[in-house]
Structures are given as structure tokens and as C-alpha cells.
Image 1 (cartoon, rainbow, N blue to C red):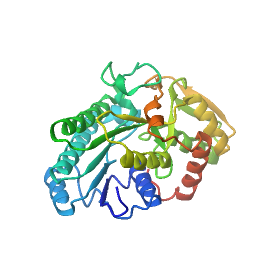
Image 2: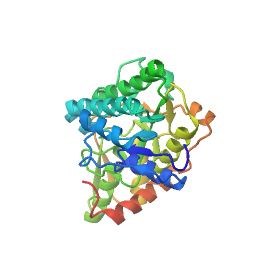
Image 3: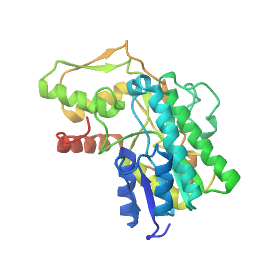
Image 4: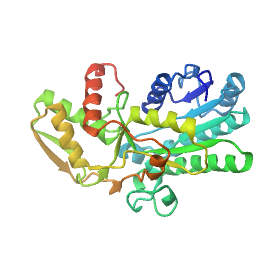
Length: 313
């Protein structure tokens, strides 16, 4: 890319998309195209084709998706598979059709089998059964990866696929039921502190382990790989270390300053036992994360406090 490249960031208002826009700005890319959902419904094939024909971007970063935590995935399976398949199919095909030079597709660590060998290597894709509570979303994302690979193989389209681990940071969704674990816990502890609640109830046993990547680190990684990487093989984007959900809860409790107890609701699902990325390929491509988990949680809590009245959910 050059500083004047015309770059379309799909999903620019989301957690990942907004971080990518910030990262592009830091690197001097100013010719950015964005559209809100109201301005452009990415599930509408005709609208997406018309947008690409009119705007003719040179680069596309596809960060738009319907996302959510365990509860949301399990409650709205039809929406998760239908909307994500429609979004990525429309954008990838229309980008190729319009002569886009390069497309970056963001997947997810949930594409890997539930019991994949840890840490999860890129070649473990399609080697086992998915986690049942989010298989709808995972299958849609796998289809997106395969579509990028197919368009590269058949048409020579420079489409790359990046698999971020669990993201968090400014702009996250802090809904207590439909968000991911880190922002949900942060809000739980914050509200428990305000109400002097004697305990915070945590879903599941607390034993599953998760890897967390600050979203601004993801933004930097996406820009770096857009500039430097071109291959059909997917690339894991993570930090290479993980913590148990219990350890995460203890960290958030400390950052928030909550003094009550943590209890477990073991009637709620744990999800996949462990999801740690193998980031050997990312290391070889010359990028590594800069934000520690504690630094990231502290900055996210500061953002939460500053935006509590206006944030989503």
C-alpha cells in the first residue's frame, strides 16, 4: 500500500474495525472509505456490488461480522451463520469483481477444533469437531477462509486470512449476556463495586484457559500483514500466552478495586477447555504484541469509565 491507497474498512465501528482505522491513521494512511450499517447493508448483494462499482477501492479489510459470546452464539445460531455468510460472500466476491488489489479477511480462533492440540497451529483447521456453542459462527468463518483461498487459486486474487484470538479494548461490547468474557466480567465487577454486592457470580468453573489480545495490537498486526504478507495460508494473530478464566477474574477484580468474593455458577457452560494460538508463523513475519494483559485491562477499564453513559449495552 501507499499513503494515498484507497482503503475500505468494512465494520469500522466495531471493536476490531475501529482499531484498524486507528492503526491505519498512525501509519499515515488517510484515504479511508467507511460505511455504517445504515449506509450500506453488507448482507444486501446488490447494494454491496453497487458500492464497489462506485468507490473502486484498491484495498479492503473485512472486519465486519455478527459477533457475540457463548450465550449469543447459542441463542441466535441462524443469525450467526446466515448474516456472516452473506456479509463475507458479498464483500469478497464484489471486491474481486471490482478489481481490488488486496483483501484481508478477519476470522477467529473458534475455527479450530474444540480439542485441537495446544497451542493451536494453523494446520489444525478442519481436523476435528468444533465447539458446539459457537459452531454456527465458526462454520461461517471457515467458509470465508476457503472462499479467499478459492479466489486466490482460481482467479489469482490476493486475499489473505488472519485469525485473531480473543479481542478486548476500547469500543468493546459490555453487555452482561451477549458480550465476550472479559468485558462482561469487567462490567460485573464494576457494578458489584458500586452496589457493594458481597459476591460476583462467574459463569462456569473458571478452569478454561483463554488468550487475550488488545485490539490496538490487532490493528497494528493487520496493517503490518496487509503491507507485507501475501499467501493462501492463514495466519494466527495472538500473544502466545493464556490465563484461566479464574485468573482473569482475579485480575479484573484487582484492577476495578472490588473487595467481595468470586463464586461460580457451574450450571453455565465452560466452552472450549483451552484456546491458545501458536504464533510461530506471526513471529516469522516480524510482528509481536506490545500490550500486557494487565496494561490492557487497566486501559480498557479507564475507557469504560469515561464512556459508561454512551457505550453500547
